[in-house]
Image (cartoon, rainbow, N blue to C red; front, side):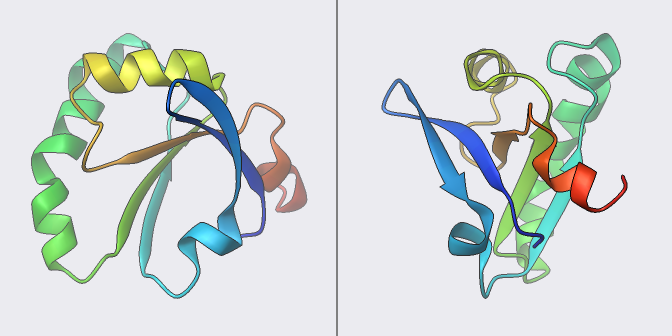
Length: 104
């Protein structure tokens, strides 16, 4: 997992996490989404991710991580709406820390 600091919701407040500390020594399936509440992501992609999460975990992945540029408050609402709270860890990278270092 690339180095970076991401925002997430924890106990109803925004918490900054270090990717190396959270994802270190685990096989991570990481994908990005263009934005929470975008029709394609909300209606098609996210339900597929939630539906196939157990199958992905059976293939020895320790974490499924979704990264988006939205703020943590928006992401939290989107996660609740799409029933993705348990299987997928959605993180905010509004500062683009990770992508700018990797020319993404």
